[in-house]
Length: 479
Image (cartoon, rainbow, N blue to C red):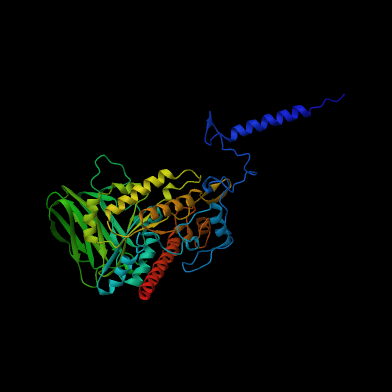
């Protein structure tokens, strides 16, 4: 007689189900010896996700059609259907109409006049005004990628010649297309590099300690139209005692001067040349006792200047190391009309973990920047796109939309301006598409733009500013 195993099979199935259910509630990343447990979810295919928190879904982000390159025009009223589906899938609750995400600068200032001062300053360039923008960023814009093309486009429209603020040393000096930059004999301190005896840091988050005979040499590059020559040079320093230094413009003979002692306050030295200007400038410091240097500016009178304060690895939090009282001294000289904060890339992950820690960090940073630049409009530029491997596919990291949403929320809380760079450059999987274009617009780390990609995004942002200016003028005339 044949034995019936149905009861035993059912019992075994129930035991396996209980075991798998128990494993599914264990957190991912646990280890047993050298074996790492992966997060299991045996109910993923049957669970109703309609009422779940959109940032705890286990499903991957929907991917848009990647059969052809697509970059949103800043004036377009259309968006990829797949991109709209992506927005619905993460159920972002917009502070503004999500139709305009990436197409407009969102104004969360308390009087809704956030860009008035900036565009009023732009209009006064024709009357001799110099307009300056301080751009605090991370590695996404280092080497003047994006910012270089944005600067050049806006200088074509609004005037100005010269790269603006330049550091004394740079780890990406050979990478820049805006400037040829050589230096020797300096110790650099920064908001990122830990140091027990870090001095007071300057406007760009750095301070530079010279060794005897330290030098810095700047020469115009031919890639951009407006950064080849400049007619004014200024550098910033502090000095416990008077110090000798040497400067040289172009092919002229070197000139020796004495820097006055500035032990407690910021000192500035300025050179002004002819209208033709120069394409090269060098400074050298034979005497260095008690001297700190903070950078220089290369400009040519009225116009707009974008000062790139990018720091590799800057998540935004380290900016709290800037001393507001000292930054006020820089701003008294520079008189910035707009402050831009573009960070977040270093906080992006490929898991939808809680971003409250980063929100708390940026909350403090936003307050600190407002203390450093009281009364100045601050524009928060969201994190762009970042691709990573999810299983066997490369797609937008899941932390990207969570951080964009959080940055928008914080901008609204603090009454700042906000630009959604994620949607502005094309939405999900943009870096994947960029990395496989010809010419390639992004590196295959799916994180950083190439120079060609910086040109595309920089010109896109220039068009955005010009459209915002047109809107501002039209609104003012209608009043």
